[in-house]
Image 1 (cartoon, helix red, strand yellow):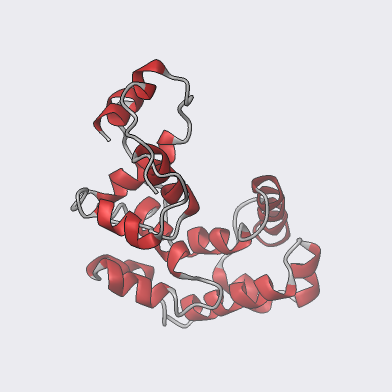
Image 2 (cartoon, helix red, strand yellow):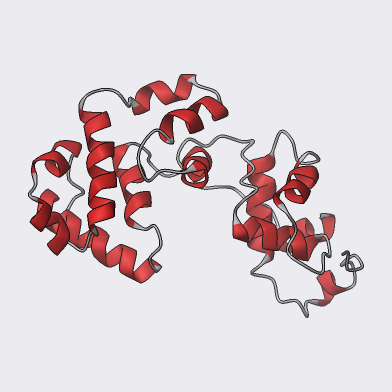
Length: 200
């Protein structure tokens, strides 16, 4: 991994604001292209926030037809209303999450319909700035491990977890290097000379 770190250079994971908007945005972007997700997000902002993302209460008050014409599927509308209800009622308190462990945050966030473990891990990593998050099920991380450690086929989550033990307590940074490794030209001489032999 040292050769890749030297080639990629220092990395710093940029932390973006969290809260209701961040988690709602993650739901909006599920299973659609980046362009489609951006378009729907903007239409929701126009419909409910006059250009900014609407508050949780808007999703509870807006007619389903308004959500539909904003580009939200019935399923995503249900997910967003569940999230909005939990936030509006105080059941989900984003300010409280900072006092919880990573696993406790994951457990709390995955109570929201439509929020799985991967989404919760991305929230921990990019919005809460937690340093030791290892999303073993992330395809990019798995592809990065395949490339960096020379596997012939896509490694299992168990294999990713085994390599991740060496990154502890900086698994977030290790994961980020796996993503960044996919941007490097495989013909790069600085890397090709140090790539390990392929593993089964």
